[in-house]
Length: 258
Image (cartoon, rainbow, N blue to C red; front, side):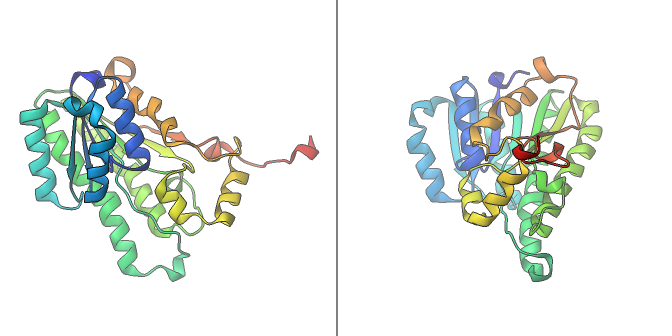
């Protein structure tokens, strides 16, 4: 099912990467249900995306609230249109050395990033399987693929999403549902700006061959491709890094060394 033939649910859909994906999919004619935990962000998105009102629903929801997510997904599938896709973009992050990370912070990050993605995926997949079609795209991170400093909790949560993606891809293939993930590198979002210090930014840029942070809109093409089974219908269980080359880089030389 092409992404403009049904509704795509986007968690964390009113800020950063989620907002860029919401807007980008709306501009292609897709219907979107955008979910976000912040009422102010929901209100702002309704105003800024008012031109797409016929194709957009924006609702306040905590992805860890299973009853709320189930109710919203059920209502969407019955009243707004059949759900053909899901992008799990909601997430939180902290940059703290492992020995300074308290258990409460670790649990909170796992609860939002991992359990929240599972709750939404399960609710959506239960509807998709009745039609034997659908695509789920999880937003993980290069911090789930590499041991990045200060990310013991965040990296663990994103690594768990990679494994969850693979397991769900295997189990749901028999009912026609594909599950893949995108692993962004450093992307200029409000979350990144809040977490990354000037020193952190300098270190990231030095470790990225393209020598810059990505923009949220640069994930759109990959997400659209993964949602559209006319173009990626034989792709499932994969993690695609959109990271400026970060995960590919080994020994790097300065320009003066060439």
